[in-house]
Length: 458
Image (cartoon, rainbow, N blue to C red; front, side, top):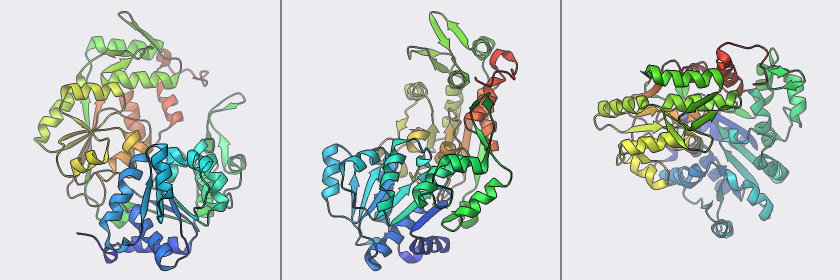
């Protein structure tokens, strides 16, 4: 059964009207608020009712481009008449998709540079699904799209997390929307106006912090073209329960961990681990907490099975209820698959099988499946086998199940190895204090066993 226009929520109708009235629109809606259907409805009206636009480019994460937009398109009766072409796959397939006569062309963000360099730009409207993936002004995709921005009449930026690592992330996103009208044409000017140096080592500045009152000023500057809403304020969201499942290493395993933590180097038999800086140390400590670690030659060194044992207990306790397992390192995935009958969520078919209840234990990587995928029909339990410092990826993956349409209480389990960097990451995620600075602060105190104030270059 297809859904009708009348079944949209009132706040969704408000957002549609906002897009219609604003050629530049930032739709900063929380996960599960229906950014795709809001945008598709507005595009239908603009293209087939008002006739004010003709050729639309949607830029999205790869799997969202492959699955979510076409799936959403097929669910709604009132979108009849719009034609979609997916500019995906091989070079030949992308070229054929661009020749096909359609209203909306959907491309994954990795191919934006290719599109700009190889195609005569004739898109009058651009939608950037997950605008925060354009948060780096140094990225080639940002530079390519910025070059084409003056040719675009209408632009819509969609995201639930516009500032995942701080307000500096906002400038590139807003620059693509309004070409520098509100936050300035150059990031240096934006930084000078609203920020102060934070972490530094003499002349080298590692991070910036907002000046007093800067956040309010920035939000006021962009408020005329941006809408921000949280799902809990507008949707009947299911209950969400967050749990920690603590595991403990034995004395031998703890000693291996502590030695690497203390000395930044560790020898295990003929294998040697060496962490050159705080980021590398955090990475290796997280791996050891999970139960295995790569050496310098990418060989997997086994440390313990504590998390695998805990995962087995969680799967058994689920008693046939589907579980979505989030992993971070490839060796974690390999060890999980070697022990359990787990299926990767990789393709559109995998997503369909999960939502139809055909997969009981699923594996998913936050970086490849965090944005846009609707998985709430297939289950309501997430197990974080390994954690990430990225608040954005953490929140986005949780929102695959905790979103509108979920019929059950969502349970999010975190398997935490006691006395390890797992605890630092979990605490940072709960405080929403994440990113490079939090990582360095958490790990720096461990190097050499004591906090060393002079080692700001770590």
